Length: 121
Image (cartoon, rainbow, N blue to C red):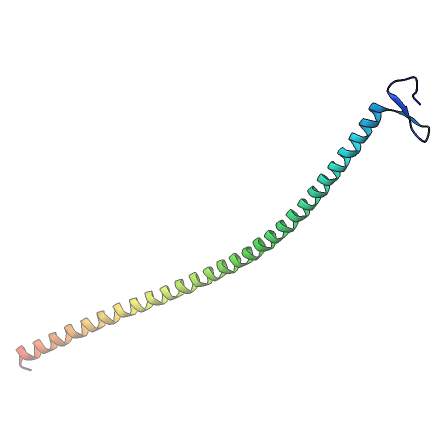
């Protein structure tokens, strides 16, 4: 049984739908399935990338804390080196004073020896 319109056919449940509308509906349904699959894939990809980003954030946080520890240690070591340098400078000054005292005492003993030797006291 055909209806007066050539683009329509009678279905079993006595509902008439134009052929072009039926084709369009089937195409939309197929496209909907494809887009749903793409959406699921996109969501899965986003979830995977979110996990990767969280893991990298954890690594960055860990390395940031390690860097902070290294910087604190560097500051402590620099302070220790500066302290030791000041101690070395104090020792150097004392060595210089002791050398001066030694040289003066050597000079005085030479002078006294010279005076005693030539004066005959």
